[in-house]
Length: 84
Image (tube, rainbow, N blue to C red; front, side):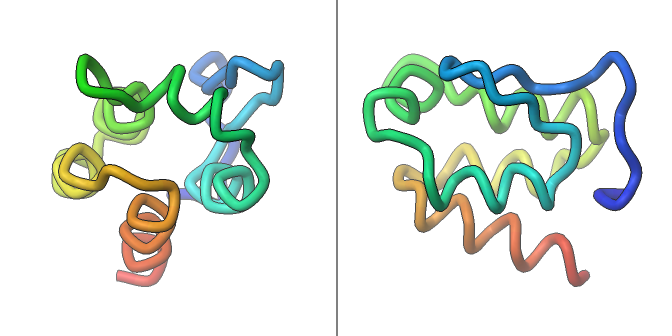
């Protein structure tokens, strides 16, 4: 699934980057600024988990991403999902 671009379902990061796939998310989490990450993932929300659940229809990964609190934890969950 992550190899295909999701037209009309791109995730727009606060810094303007467009993510179309899980592979894009995995790569961007390695370079995203802490402030931009905190804008999307905090005590009130996890925008990445919402995008994964609704754009990628992957509730299992979305749950794992919701439990994750750091960029590294989310990257690990996404990496595992890309190869399952």
